[in-house]
Image (cartoon, rainbow, N blue to C red; front, side, top):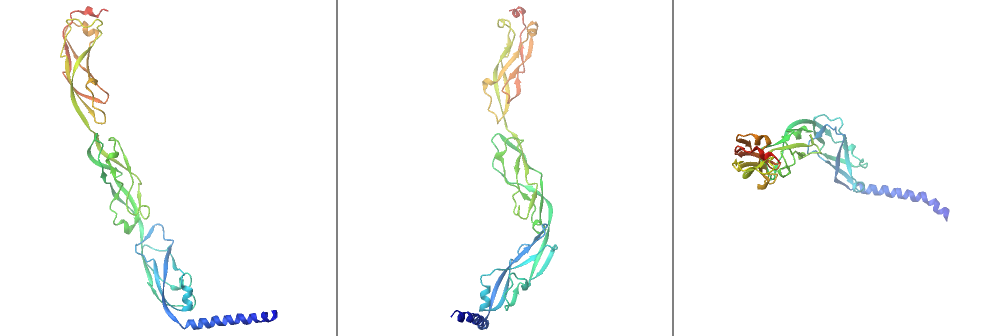
Length: 320
């Protein structure tokens, strides 16, 4: 029995082959038209060149295949691969050869049409041009600052590098907004970066950071105080009766920047320094009035500027 089945194996295999050939013959008589889509793959484009936008991503193949052949095609992905390393700037024409499709089509399939039959590739070199830099000014300055001029950007121009065709429409580089609330003094510098379409994909901008300054000043306010004048004297026993001075008050005008508090009345002091030599002088004295104020306060004027002291008749008051 075992010998019988062993002898039948070649006959069994032969029958399978004949059945497959018969199936191919029968199914081959049922030819039909089908459309295949093959994607396009572009490799090795030179780094200093770019393709024009709108390049086809695929081509269409119209084929004639029987049922059996088409079953081999179903579910498979096809593509054409092109090496662009030898492209030159300008218009380049690439013929679509269906024989170079990957993977190869099964034998017996007839390609009736390829669309498009050729691919036009416009190639543009990368160039560099210089354009002005702009920024949008938003917000408001702190209350103690005042704008006295325009916003200044350093450097004022940017070097832009990209495909020649795309750079034609680039006439300026926009930066991130300059927020006035970020300024603290006239020396404040804001660091802003470019914000432009295509950055880090096909476009590069140098420098990558720009310095922005504002022409601003710190606002000031001024007021006047009327304060008593005090004598700063070496008299130990108090001033003698004949020692008198006028006026006993003076008017002081001061100013301060609004990033500091307003000075209080008691912080403004007026004094006249009366030395021993002054006291020994028998004539009338005319001495300057000295103003003492907080460090952030600027003295604009004192009226009167000097204090008049009458003659001193008793120099013995200097004795302890």
